[in-house]
Image 1 (tube, rainbow, N blue to C red):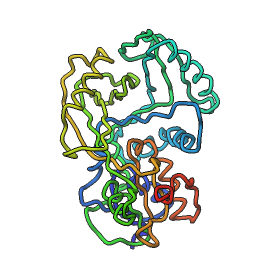
Image 2: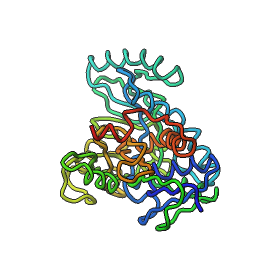
Image 3: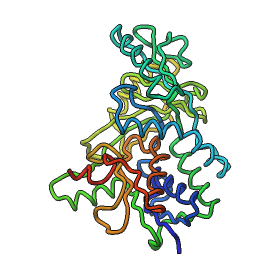
Image 4: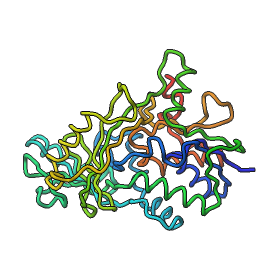
Length: 345
C-alpha cells in the first residue's frame, strides 16, 4: 500500500510527490501521458517575481517560493544525478521612457524591503545588462531574484529523483492512501461540470519557440511582453502568447511568428538565430488566478492542486510544502485565496 497517490505528473504533481517523499511517505504518481507531457512540457522556464510594489499575500508567497527554489532544485539535482537547468541569473527589462526610469528607480527602493535585502532591483546602462539588448533610454532594469529552469529537464530530473527515493511513477494504477489530483486542464474541466454555468477554471493556450542561440551565462530578458530565456544547453527559449480563445490547442500560427519577431528586435543576438522548435499547449488557469489547493470539491476526502497557469514551476516548491503540510500532518497553511472556494465565489 502506498501512503499517497497523486494523479498528474506535471510540475505540481511531481513537486508534491517530492515533498511527501521527503517526509517519509511512500508515493505513487499516475499519469497516462507520462512525465511532464502537458503544460509542463513547455519551453520557456522563466521564474520571475512580481513587481516590488503594492505587496499582498499572493506576491509574498510567490517571493517565498522563488527564494526557496535554488535549494529545492539543488537537492533534486543531487539525488537524481541530473541537471534541471536551474540558475538564478537575474532578468533584464528595457526602460522605454523617462517616466519608466523614474518608476523603476522608485521600485529599487521598495525592493530592498519587500525582497528582504537578499535580492536587488537596479537601474543600469544597457551595456551593463549582461545580455545584448536594445533600450530606447539606454537604461534597463536588472533584478537578481529572477531565475530560469528548463521545463522538460526539470520534470525529468524530479521524476528520476523520486524513483531513486522509492516513489512509483506509472501510467496507471490503483489509488491508494491519500489521493491528490494535480491534473491540470482536465481537472478544471471536471470542476466546471460541477459548477454549472460558472467557469471555475479554463485552458489558456500558449505558444513558444526555441532558438539556436547560446546565451547560457546571460540573464533572461523581458521586453515588449516577451520572455527571452537562455538555457544551460545553449538554446534560448522565447514566449509566450496567452490565448483565451483558440481553434487548435497544439498548433502554432502567426501569433508565434509575431513573438519571434519581437524577440529578435529586442535582442540583437537573436537576429539570425535559427528556430529549432515551435511549441503550443494548454495551461490551467483557475478563476481566482491563483493556484487551487486544498480539499477537492468533487471527490470527498481527496485533495486538489491545480491552476498553476504560467507560474506553476515558480510556485511548485511552496505549493508542494503546503500540500504536504495538509495531507500528511493535518496543518492547513494554505492562504484563503489559494483554496478551491475562492474560484467558486
